[in-house]
Amino acid sequence: MLAGARIDVDEKKKNPFDFVLWKSSKEGEPWWDSPWGRGRPGWHIECSVMSQRFLGDTFDIHGGGEDLIFPHHENEIAQSEGATGKPFANYWIHNGFIKVDSEKMSKSLGNTLTIKEILTAYHPEVVRFFILQSHYKSYIDFSDASIAEARVGMGRLYATLKNIKDALDKKADFSDTSEKDLSREDGEVFKKVSTLPDRFKEAMDDDFNTAMAMGYIFDTVRIVNGYISKNSAPTRESLFVLNEARERIREVGKVLGLFLEDPDEYFEKDKEREAGKSGLDMEEVERLIDERKKARESKNWSRADELRDLLAARGIVLKDTPTSTTWKVE
Image 1: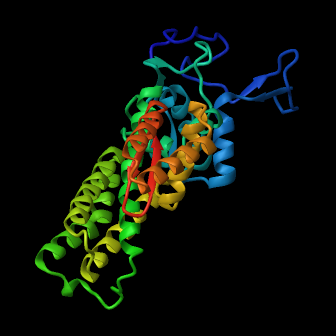
Image 2: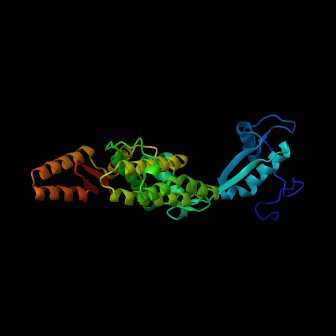
Image 3: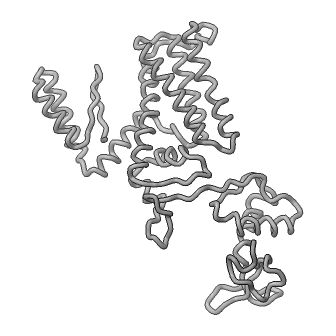
């Protein structure tokens, strides 16, 4: 706020705190006629005009980087409220900077990343998950290691949804089941998972605390995983609880743009993306897995182990179930 500290004081200004609404044209710049001569809108006025055009005189949330608080957003408020006499925005959300490998992302450093570039390498929900793990005011340090950790975390959440799906696919009928039919243990788990939306809302009401909200989702997933392991032979009561868990996880996930895909489709896309990044031939991988399956069926355990090791050397981790073998790229 010290005159001349940020930029030189312009002698044309009556007060150093004044800012430009209309700039006189310079050679080679676009211009429009006005009562004050040829010129163009100042930097700040364009944002007020666009928001008023599409959102009205007053709107709910205004976002932006923390570096825009002064002078840009303060000037937006001054000119908008001066023109309309109404509040400009009800809430302001100023996010921390994004760093790339611990350096601020900027054009001058040549380390900028576009969303289009990122999405060729990572699933959109992994990117969302990575961002949501931090409070919006916090700095985010984007690196291959950090996004890889986010992929693992997203995989754990989708794995739980897949386990629920597999259990529900066993087709035990729970349509006539209600909370009053549950045992004490089933009822306790039901209560914990059914209150997830309330806890989620509490976190989001606390200054959009997505980090806390994600923590509540992981708490619920941990409870569900333990519950599934104790109920390997599903009953109609346990399936009723698992269905409630799936619906509540999806309910809060939809707000954040997460869990929008079928779990099997998510993992299939993840495999294809990771295989492409690693230069793996999907057909070759499937051929080796099929060969291993036949070796296991013929009890040729040494060949089956050899093929598992061969796939592991390529970064492929196998998971055998009584009915099939699934794989993923580590």
